[in-house]
Amino acid sequence: MVEASLKKKKQYYKELLHLISENNCEVSLKDRKQFAAKSFNISSHYDTAIFNYFNKDQRISSLKISEPNGKVLRYGENPHQKGFFFGDFDSIFDKLHGKELSYNNLLDVDAAVNLMAEFIGEAPTFAILKHNNACGIAQRETVHQAYVDALAGDPVSAFGGVLISNVEIDEAASEEIHKLFCEVVIAPSFSKNALEVLKNKKNRILLIQKNIELPYYQYRTALNGVLYQEKNNKTDNASVMSTATFAAPTASELEDLFFASKICKHTKSNTIVLVKNKQLYASGTGQTSRVDALEQAIAKATHFNFDLTNAVMASDAFFPFPDCVEIAKNAGVNAVIQPGGSIKDQLSIDYCNNNKMSMIFTGTRHFKH
Image 1 (cartoon, rainbow, N blue to C red):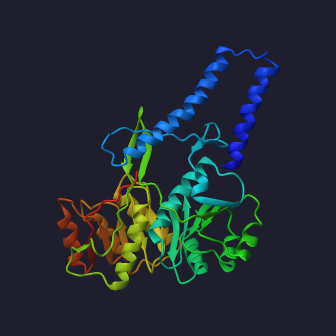
Image 2: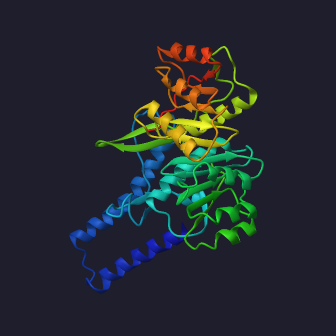
Image 3: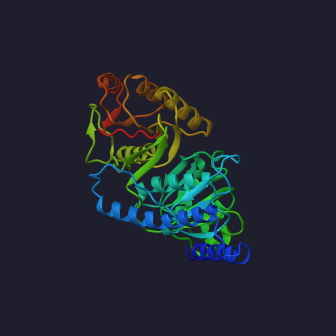
């Protein structure tokens, strides 16, 4: 931030010197407009900060955003698109190593940070993300084993992905990570030896995530305007669930169900997530049909030789028909977590009861578009 401020000052003095030495102190209309824009950039930023301070309760439905520190990116989603980042990246991360982050890197980093926020304070958890979705995630006794099992979830998709841990990355984990080509590695800290290993790839981006609160609101452009909403800060847990079937999930199944639900919440809709022993076996992501999402997940799990016997399934929205629970049962799934709320919920409940499956309702849908 200090470096950026110095660059701006140098540019300002360069422009003044140009006016004095080359323009004979004459100021053209173009020059006056440029200096006016710079002045109002400062004053409008100040006014916006004051308004947002007094409107924290959102009683006035007016959107005012001012981010004066824009960073020019190499390009946008694709090389033919211009890209910029407006925000204070340094308030969230310390960048230790690697090349400049791209537009797509930043989107994946955002997805990774929001997913891992679900596991703060828990046992070592490691996730690998690709195109904003988790392709591997596992929770284990050590960060090394968590990484190894996360990678096993989809070692093909992991290539070129963004990696994140909820605990310090140690040397043992770093040596395994170093074998993989990945764009970004994020952790609350790295051991000294781990850094020495990971810095051997000059372009690999290493980020220390600071312990700060993430923004509460989300924005995205739509049509000729902006959509603005509260972030989905609800996390499914035992206090919100109700058992819909005769059979209740076992204690270990419950742990897997809530683990799967956290992943499901951060995966593109329609999604189905399959988990066993706190390891993502597979997910079906961004499908127009929930059945397609489930069949995609089963096919992926089978491809990587996972045994779905006694696995659990999470869905981001309810089942209007019993087809998904039937397909899941035939694949080996014994327990299901879903929001409930369909007028045809009973069809899925009846199938589960007739086939010794357990199913819990959370009452909260987790669409992610």
